[in-house]
Image (cartoon, rainbow, N blue to C red; front, top):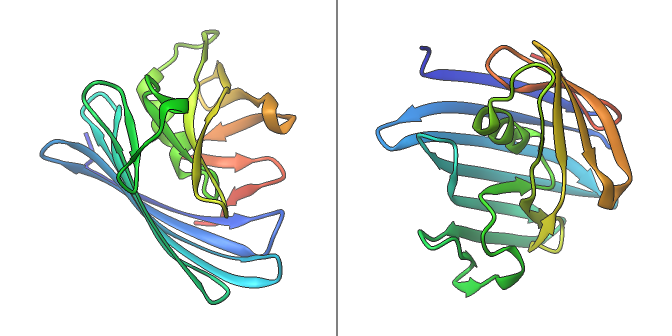
Length: 185
């Protein structure tokens, strides 16, 4: 099995891009990327990293960067007992969840696709600890995935009124996230 994959996305709803690298580590997997886009007319630069165990359960995430002239930094940790910490503060509203969803990148959809490893025709609820942007707060995001065929998933995040067919690569990266992101390389 290959140990590194990368992708470049073009943002469709705003001007911007996101580049992401997936690497195998001695403890599991690491997603590392950088999203550059305009937010409310201001330049935005967000470097992110997500660490997962071998079964694709989130262990840690970090986001650093800026929006306009405001610097941003957050560290997210999922503890062994299922509790989540954001910059050292407990996050009771997302306790027990397994996945992180960084709201500014399609990279973290990859984690759910890989972790659930659904067979064609199978569906699952996929609630995640959602990092809202630009607030940088964790909330529960109820979402669902249903695998339609080898490379397509019916995806829904009803809190945002979003339902679409996501096309994914053989590795699991989202290639087409209708209205939001599209693979550029």
